[in-house]
Amino acid sequence: MFTSLAKPGDEASGSAVEAELERRWRDSGSDTIDLLMQWAAEAIATKDYPRAFDYLDAVTTMRPDYIEGWNRRATLFFLQDEYGKAISDLEKVLALEPRHFGALAGLGMILNDIDRKKEALLALKKAIAIDPYLDDQVRDAIKTLEPQIDGREI
Picture (cartoon, rainbow, N blue to C red):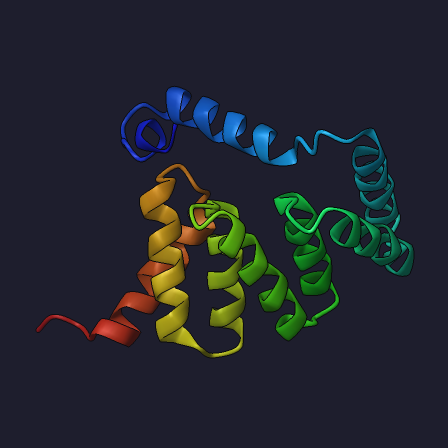
């Protein structure tokens, strides 16, 4: 699937592969984990972040190999401006699935925000190489960072 995804040009096919990968990553194989993830999503939607953290902490404790538990908790840390904790959780996601384009893109955006530009550019380029259909925010960040890191042509 990753080979199909990496081929630019067919946006409909690329989007379908992207959606299928994301669906597989969300599939925990456990009704309990699925329920905790649903409750966490509801808590996030109502901005009840402490409750969402409780649910996601339970998910990552019960299933430390479940990628989306770490990924969702990283997103929640990001929403709380807890960048160090978000990076730590994204690193766990990437240890479990190094091709997780969403985690790479999120990591790149956070690294950019905390002025670690070179690392940000590397993460964003990895993300876009895996999934060339990522949203324009990733491409725009790459276009902004490249001249800062690689220099400008004369």
